[in-house]
Image (cartoon, helix red, strand yellow):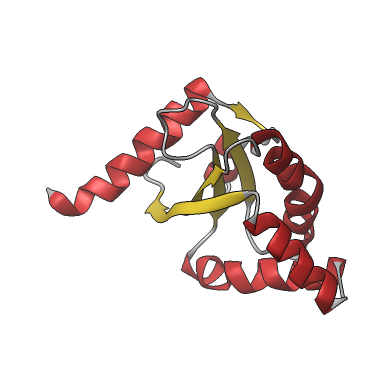
Length: 150
């Protein structure tokens, strides 16, 4: 029973987030899953104290254009960001990438990095952007889960 705990936790987190949070982007995740999504890569982030709105703007203004570039090149099927201001939650922002298969999963990080380089070729500015984002949030976890329903 123990190996199922991460999958059950992820499933509960996704359900809870969809019930109690607002998505920063609206995408038809169900359609993406039916179109062949078999995995989800989930990243959990916690905005630093007093940085919730600023980090939300960062996701919208910086991360989403990078996501769009990576998506355009086939890096993943969809991404949705969920947010919660529930102070008892370990995370404030959960980003869920729906992936076709393990090949997309293996290439996701490199594809996002590559998209970031295409959108901002200047390595000094990319490093500054990374330092800025580090001042806005902390990574509190990540999970890769299989999607059971298609």
